[in-house]
Image 1 (cartoon, rainbow, N blue to C red):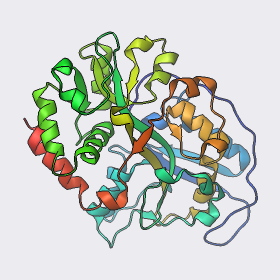
Image 2: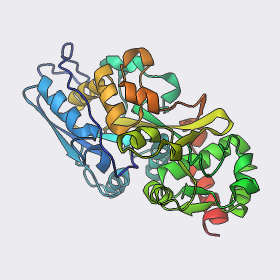
Image 3: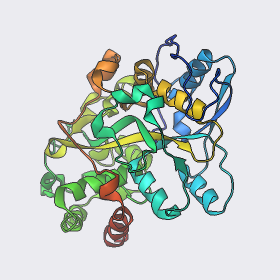
Length: 360
């Protein structure tokens, strides 16, 4: 979840063991060495609430000779795309924190001859069989495994506005100057909301809808945190955010009346996060062991609570804390675009939106 800069979480430690040693490249034996995991800062920046420290401690506890080392490159995965373009090395074995949009953009940038990630043989990641099918990236090269997901929704103050239930509601005078959104060029949540409107109105209608939103006073800010901070300061009564935000509100003792969740058309836009093995790494076997650990039920429960996202595996594989189950809401109808739908379209949609909406 590349969005938050506040609040804390908690969790327990599970003592488990991996069944046997898996190997994709031969050699066998007990895993050893250092696995360098590249990810985004909030995945590791707070030991008490980010999942990174828990994952490192528990994975290393299973292998005496393994060390997990995190790196958080500036500009995220874009840093590695640029290094590939320059023919430079990549200082990581795996990347944790990709979404479908990232993968499509990476492929469009690097082309067919240069790969940043390698194909994953799922036979060596047994827990991948428990993944929820709707969260799969649809990658034709099978390079990414999802490990959690958020759902883009509206968060609103029920003391200031009634619950909006349709996209049309947001263009009604009752919601004039009410909504905070994020720039689709610079924020994952902003791009997800844009894609949600394209899913609703089609490529021929989404810009007209945004013009109506603009006429009704939508305010577009650069990042999720910038928009959410403005919401917390009561600058507007409604913000594009995540359907898990009541989990944060509960932990921080914020008024729940100001953290109501609105699912337009009974939908929420799914934005799963995934992990991939860097092409050229010598640690493929250890990477696949790490991925299998990430998809284990106990690990999935910790990631959900600490990263405040829903697990990527089916519900029967995870026992979530009662507070998470109480305050995290899954939309009745999750919607999203997969790789095939975004390939060749994503950059054009975003650029057209930027020229038509963000620049005005």
